[in-house]
Image 1 (tube, rainbow over the protein chains, first blue to last red):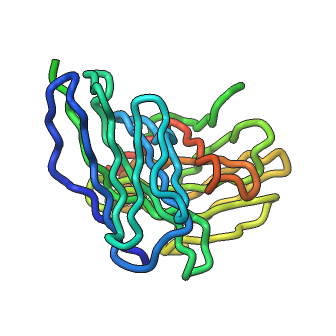
Image 2: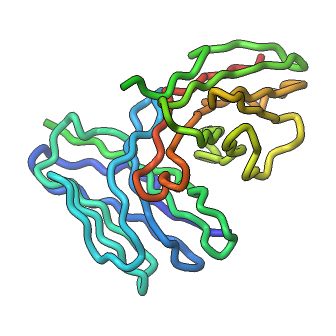
Length: 114
Length: 115
């Protein structure tokens, strides 16, 4: 099965800077990769999806890249704000297992300081 | 439109008891998935239902079960509760075959504490 690695240490940055979060997977390339935001005690909220044949996807201040050679996705938040503080999860499907059900990483906590 | 509704929000149960959690998906969504989230294991997939049928199942013991009704509402049941079942239980809904395209919509979860 797919193993997903996200940095367990919190990322602390200053307001206005760009936050970059990493999602690494260890086995086969997924058909898609999704990013979610989760606030404490709440369910994850879908942010962006990138497919295996796409290199980059943007949405407002968010940008996701997907490098199937490195088996890595990077999630960027430009001009970060304290309101961006949350845990960010990546999720991948399991094409070799024949399942489209996403497997989630454990997430990285982002803390944006004013 | 209304989001995914999970009830109750909080539950405290005693070891050995059983519990039923409810999930109402977004109107029109027929696929409902359940996840267990703990600090140690993260989000773990329990099962997925579509049109009242279980389509996928995660690696959980048989004490965890679920069902889906004709109106797409879903329930999950945990019997003979153990302390390790304490977790945030999340429900996610999606249109058929669209979750991987448009993402999954999660409810706020039910926080279950087993004492």
